[in-house]
Image (tube, rainbow, N blue to C red; front, side, top):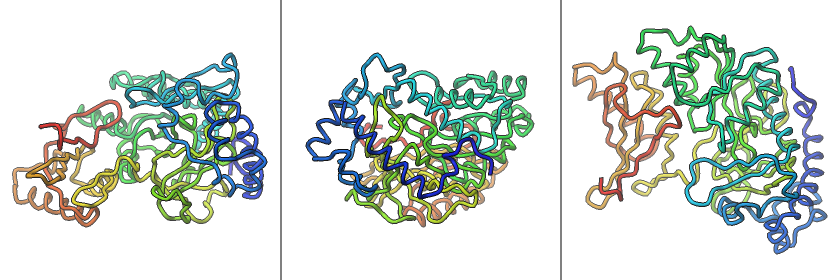
Length: 433
């Protein structure tokens, strides 16, 4: 296999030996911050306590609430004049979650992102269009830095303005791009509606992430745009994109264990779960000086895939993110994740790319309604065919989520659309709607 750096091909023994050394160094660095000096001191934890990686469990978890309470500089572990970049997580109200970086931190991040891109076939000389938000959001600048580090001609296109995006893709003969899944489908269908073939666009590789999506949605992107789409995982607290990435096998995301320690724990007990069993992802930085974060509860649900990857890399693989602990819907006593609904919907060829889960309250009972766009060629006058499709979708959803939702079939392009992250759940239970 081709690789970007030596760490990409380390064996398990080397990975774990380096992890332990870097964990101890990270603890020494973290103790310089007011937050971790207090947290680790109260827990009686020191670098000398870390005799093996299992000893990491002596350290209490860190959460978003901790990071907000320490805003803005409570977790910073260097002198302020060493900091060169500040990012804040998107989608928060009130006190944000912020991460500060030194130049060394940014260089490490760029190398990790370049490693991800190289792994899926992007090389120096590729033309890379970054269709992501820049600014406090980490996705834009993180992937941009990786593309430049790799030697790509990098286009900071940003989000929105579909006509401009398509013009750049064509005129600059773009070979690879970064895009969120719902916007990739949006662009493809916008071209179809104008009578153009989306597969005529030049890119051969798409990096997709920033919002949850199923493997069915990925296959639709690949079929619609005529390229290979690789799943990316990252979060602002761990830098942003570049934490874990699919290889050419497209069977799990390699988490870069020379830069992070990943754990999967039971969301309730906090105890580790076996490989193959779903739990909450917990992450620790190993190469960040400005603001190390230790045992951070991501709230993302996934599992470690057992066995080795056919690509030969020994960095462990995460399964596709199944949802979030705090995105879980409870309807009639059943735990439901939006990704379960999407997986069923995307298995129907009649269903378009857009849908909306609506939560309602009728006579004191919570109910779920799923509004589903049907492709134009299937939205016919034959009510029997539509009723049969409606019933079939409802039954498949019931088998998956153990609740029978009301299914509304609507015309293609009739649900609200966004050029940013798609809104998939609308809670009307307490809004008087």
